[in-house]
Length: 217
Image (tube, rainbow, N blue to C red; front, side, top):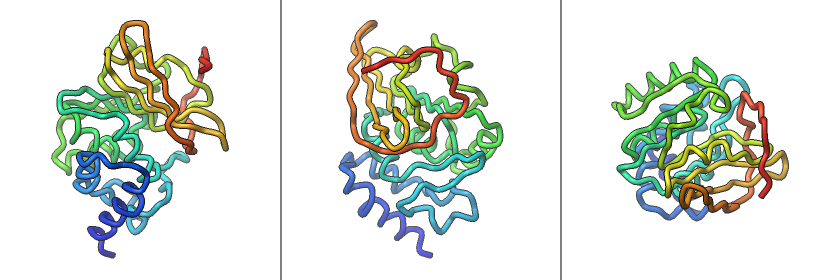
């Protein structure tokens, strides 16, 4: 299989037609070899228009959703990013190329261990990886320019938006199957947030979910 051609086709036939037009994002998705981050048994599907299964009942997102997420977060080279749900490490690697530093957490230790090796093999050294339940174990006082949540939440909770710096952006998917939607939350100042619904999609729930409060738009 010609993986380089498959990567090109993924960009041109899946990602770009989904209104991902930011050239920096497209270049990063061309630069980061997705096939190095999928399970070895799935390498021929690395650039297919599917969710690729991982361990623990998790999936990699569709490439088009990954592209939209990266574009909506509008990450600059000076940004600090938080990724909630390391998974395969592919989005972690893309974020690392876009941002100054990335803090990525996952509830599964084996995901963290495998991602650490893949990032090392890719000569990426601006990522901090931790095994944590993001809903209960993150330092809420730490703030970021961009937060990417790679699992869905049944209802919106303001928990993560409080970890944004002023001007910071949060991407997450909210709802229950079959009615889920991607959201972008932007922190305007200490007390004001702009919350926008972007598009409909379906995403596996964030594991470790124990919501104490919900928030209705």
